[in-house]
Length: 401
Image 1 (cartoon, rainbow, N blue to C red):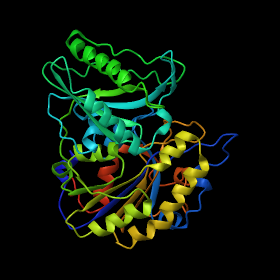
Image 2 (cartoon, helix red, strand yellow):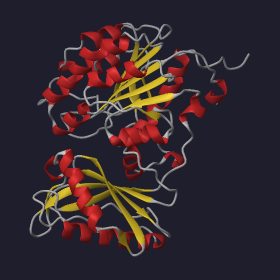
Image 3 (spheres, one colour):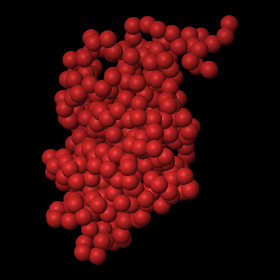
Image 4 (tube, rainbow, N blue to C red):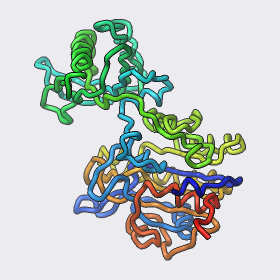
């Protein structure tokens, strides 16, 4: 319904996402990283904003990064037409143009012992340069399997993308990552008869890749996840009347933005570098700037509260770059929570603030989980965020007489 209300104006929006921002307290972590961080700029912004907490998917449901970001952009993450698998998102994010019949896979390089038992699911987080070299090694040695073209590309560090291009392929194949060490990788199994050919090709790829990588010290095999085909997603521009730009360093988030039709703008990795990229692109014709900060999530998964705290403080220190642009609307939130206490994504609601001339101030005077619990917005679905943003930007007409 709201799409009939969308109207155009010259307002500009900054949408800042700190991946895995939310946390929880327990005996080991009596404060969250956001509470522990010194954030004078975020606190001042919260004091002049409306605050609350968002639910990425639903109560009690832990989201993956892809669905969580689709929810942020206002797409129903549970709708089949928005079901972009991790493989599609990763290879799209590195600039690969998928064909409609391609099957895309997100891969991890992993370490196994002499018995084929997993000892490290991320191959010791090998440097990105090593990942590039190893992908080249696979590309040189595995070009085709059973008449299907094999394309291998580096994504980031230990992550790579795999694309199968040929006839009769199906993404209905189970993942091979058992999600913990001490086990052998799973065999790719077809979920239905139509996927049998694809499962056999992936099984042959894993075996060939393990042979090729036998002399590698860490990246000795592959784990395959997110086996998927390209979905048909309504473009961001036609949905909201916004010309979106994505400032994100990591391929997955670039991939989601690209699938939604946003323009990707190359950037550095630090918050200050990303914010300077926004400043450089500010007058380039875009009116919606999605900015993604990754390391808050990475440190949360490691249980490293000091690392997560420092990234939040880096964001806060660089925030004046964005505020100096005087956006009509600014949002600061996360895609999901990644509590250091859990070392994983979680279902807990995510801190959220929105600042504009018409947001309405509440009694929140700092930016944290507990502070946002007192905010006027309460707990709301993340998929409603874009409607709230459009309203604050003056881009929604009145409904009815």
